[in-house]
Image (tube, rainbow, N blue to C red; front, side, top):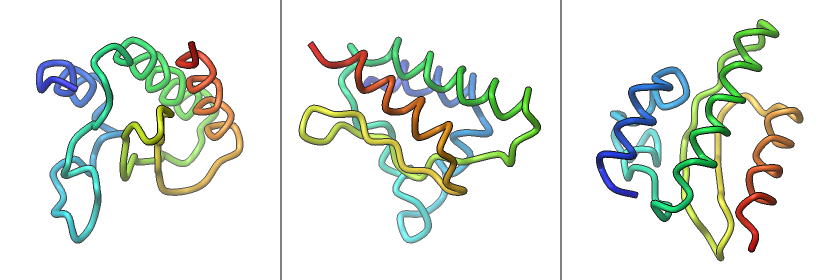
Length: 98
């Protein structure tokens, strides 16, 4: 993903991407968002959906530890596992399938 698109995600969702500045020994977010630019809109909507869910439902804040494309699928790794968020990520993947 281009730096411009990546930075927009970082700026709009600082709580989700808090680990972006951590060293590689602590988080894989140091490598950035390794996805095609064409996925930006879906990733943006996923981030907005997840952050709204956390804020509205007073859920524990999650942080992404890695966001990448692997074998044609979106892989989002995060701390504090949550079935609702897993479902949102699965829905985003379904939207990427052509």
